[in-house]
Length: 93
Image 1 (cartoon, helix red, strand yellow):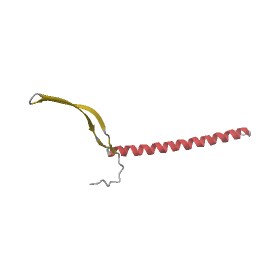
Image 2 (cartoon, one colour; image 1 turned 90 degrees about the vertical axis):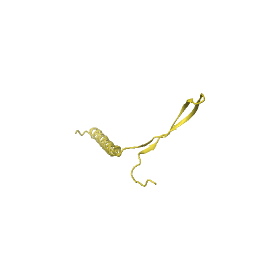
Image 3 (cartoon, helix red, strand yellow; image 1 turned 45 degrees about the horizontal axis):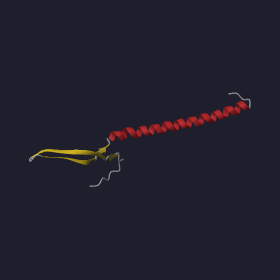
Image 4 (cartoon, helix red, strand yellow; image 1 turned 135 degrees about the vertical axis):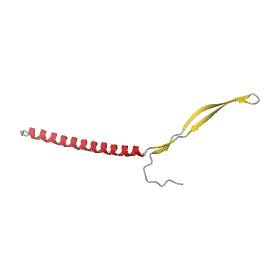
């Protein structure tokens, strides 16, 4: 089965590899052993749909706020250069 969803895929896997030891004791015949090996853990995580519903409007809001702030700074810098030019010509606002 393949996933043909067009929704954003906010999921993934993380592979954790760690050294570990396996102790075997109490085997009939008095046999016990210690084995060293590597253990691989691969948890798969899937984000909640609510995360997208909160994250997307937040990013859009920050982008709008940033563009509004940039336009305001541009307008202020243009007004500042006009004020400086009018003061040099002897006009007062």
